[in-house]
Image 1 (tube, rainbow, N blue to C red):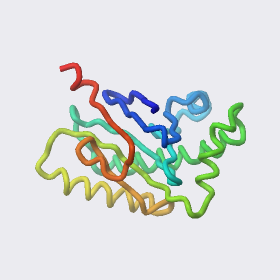
Image 2 (cartoon, helix red, strand yellow):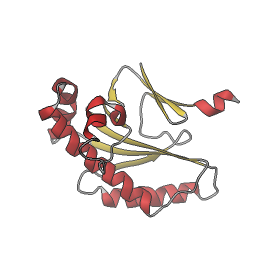
Image 3 (tube, rainbow, N blue to C red):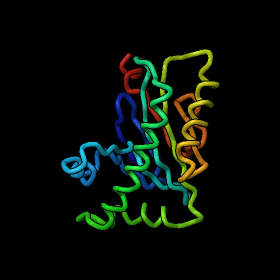
Image 4 (cartoon, one colour):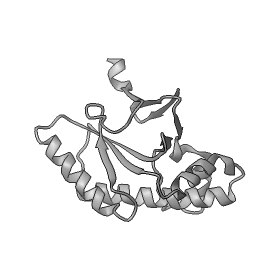
Length: 171
């Protein structure tokens, strides 16, 4: 199992996942010296032949900008894919990027874009998530049709992944 802390959450992926904490990877961190405006996703993983691009957002203490969020996530996905290609060619650790490049270049690979969104309980959450998912799907239509909006409550589509709320465990 591989566990990663992201904000106030602990993401634990089973051994069946091949996953990296992308935005903390040394290659991404070093790239920020040259491309400060470039954004990166939280996780990139492979599970049973599918490539997962995962962005985590925690709005339990803030308000979601429903117009900007899909655009921001789409930009992060675009930037992440571009940099993975670059890292594969220029990194001192190309082997770490090879599985992601190979997965990305296989036509039969399902690319799954995931927004992990935690927010305060709301009555219209299901409808809002559907709107966000549709907006994100439109912005990512050049890449995939497999777009998911997930949370601890609706963990649909992310197999063998456990997410723990570290803040709740302190209470």
